[in-house]
Length: 69
Image 1 (cartoon, rainbow, N blue to C red):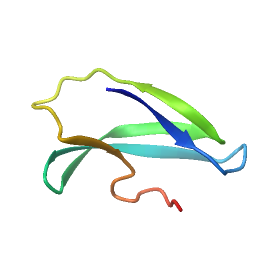
Image 2 (tube, helix red, strand yellow):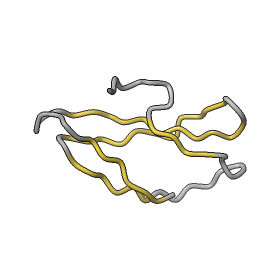
Image 3 (cartoon, one colour):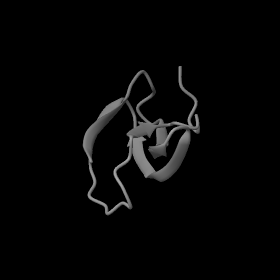
Image 4 (cartoon, rainbow, N blue to C red):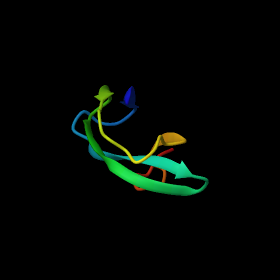
């Protein structure tokens, strides 16, 4: 899995662990892990992991663990 996660409009020292979820079946999410992000920045994501099957989608903050606007 490759991609980017962007956090913006936050103070320089604002830190968050952004959760990443995999969707295998309709409405069913499994947490893959968290990405640490500090300040207004973009993080590159490059993960290689064996999975039982291909996910339907990859979603950040699917359970609204982190407040967002």
